[in-house]
Length: 170
Image (cartoon, rainbow, N blue to C red; front, side, top):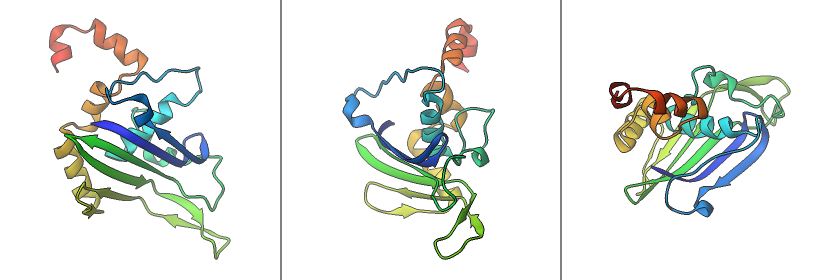
């Protein structure tokens, strides 16, 4: 799985819409995300993992914590990930449950958690269970495996390097 484009709206520290075009980084599929503390590196990991699996990348955060505290009450919160796997392009858009003021009202109402997964042939799946199954079948990893293999944070990378062979195989 290689990310092509990631769009985040009202997500994490980003009140507005942020778009990351991974295609500008080349097609090798290996990217180093670096920056100062607080620069938003973990938010990128959270957004990709949330788009794919409905949960952030780390154990210390929940999906309920992903809406930006800087988003206006009427703003949408979602992530959309375009990715390529086996030369096929897929798109997944997911939003957490949150409160949002609709255009016609002043009182916040519940925006339900939602997901839409689009296959290369244009078919879409919106049932959560079906999307989760499709992602697991296509990528071949659970969220935990994906976090360990595809996105290794600094502390986890050190643990991986220092682990014995049995632990690395697991």
